[in-house]
Amino acid sequence: MQTKKVTVKDIARLSGLSIGTVDRVMHNRSGVAEESRRKVMEAMESLGYTLNTNASLLANKKHYRICCLLPSFESGDYWELVYNAVASAQRDAEGYNLSIETLTYNQFSREEFIEAVERLKADLPQAVIVAPIYRNDTIELGHYLKEKGVPMVFIDSKVSEADYLAYYGIPMWESGYLAASLLLGDEPPQSIVNFRIERGGGIADNPTLARRHGFTDYVSENLPELRIYNEFLRPHDREHNFAVMDKFFAAHPDIRHIVTFNSRVHLIADYITTRGLKGMSVLGFDILGQNIKAVQEGVVKYLIVQRTQVQLRRGVNALAEWLAFGTIPPLKDNYMPMDILVKENINFYSELYKDN
Image (cartoon, rainbow, N blue to C red; front, side, top):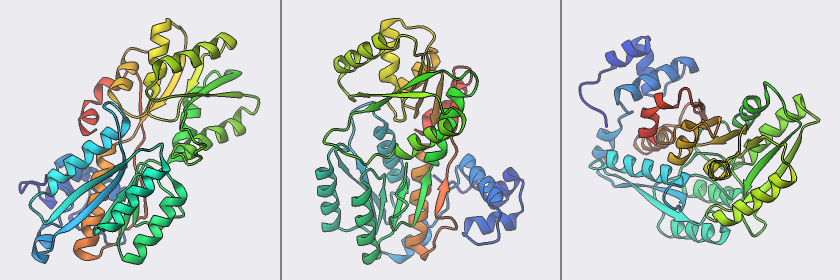
């Protein structure tokens, strides 16, 4: 939470910019270079200072509700990170006429997503945060919220065709392109395998689709002869996953490059460790505890991660500014850093672990 000890001068000193520039960033005014805006935001986060609309929210004497529409999770899943970030934001908002609630649904069930949307509509909040999975349904939700005058912010990924106030997250296509550059850039193999998550029911909507497109675009541009195999795993079925991977590597013993575009690279790391496979080059995403361990042990070579709690915090700040002042964020798409973690540097990211 913000403390009184942090001043505009402190932020200006840390960012290396003038007090006037800091003030323009804090009040979402125009005329600030994006690099300067980034430095100011990073300085505020480093000092524990958040854009404070609390006084205005209190002065309005009206209770505001922000609802987060998120997938449900089991312990250790990626969405637990997002849920924890919501809980942290809720603690920060206590006492300022602002509450942050969560509606969850099974990410593998479109029917449950639609039911969650109906519950949201029945008790409509003043603002909504969504981590989108179902594209067409999210577009419809965006249209509905716009008609009701309720702003929607995306985190984690976005649906460009929807009506939304802002997006806070990594650039998905670019993250896939980066993954290909890391995994394939030095000594390109002839073939690789992409282990995907079996979603069931013929569901086509998937937030990792843009990431996969970025990866394949890199391959098309640089390694057009590369063959990519696709195999499907289940999130919580170790026996099934081992059978799938046993069968694949028995048929393709020379393949040593593995990529997965979701947060479950630890499923692959578990298999590699258990089977004692050597010389594998594995890339995955997201800073789950099991993924961190796999990098530390040298089983996963590259882990591309995003700063989930920062995304959520900025999304909440944007909505609070809108609720208090009707302020529209200067940028609609606010792309966040992509951190590349490897065995040699992962132990220096302990603060990032705490954020998530």
